[in-house]
Length: 77
Image 1 (cartoon, rainbow, N blue to C red):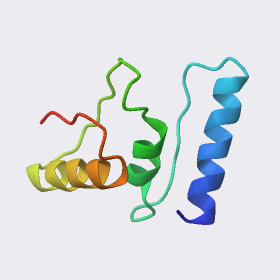
Image 2: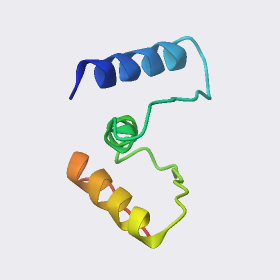
Image 3: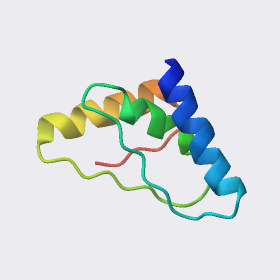
Image 4: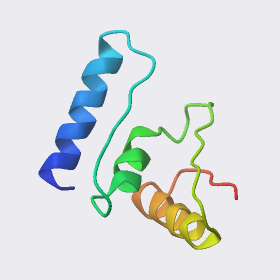
């Protein structure tokens, strides 16, 4: 992972550890938001995470990146 991705995950964890239940992560196009998200979604958490994308091509790309970054995830399309 890149330094800024690791920093984003650390900041996210700081928010959660402080009792936060929601946070936004804003990164520019092409900086690996899906990779960061895959690291934040525990495969066994029992809850659901939702991604919205505008095209089928981006849907497939997102699913592929999620599974590459975290093969234990269950991804539904």
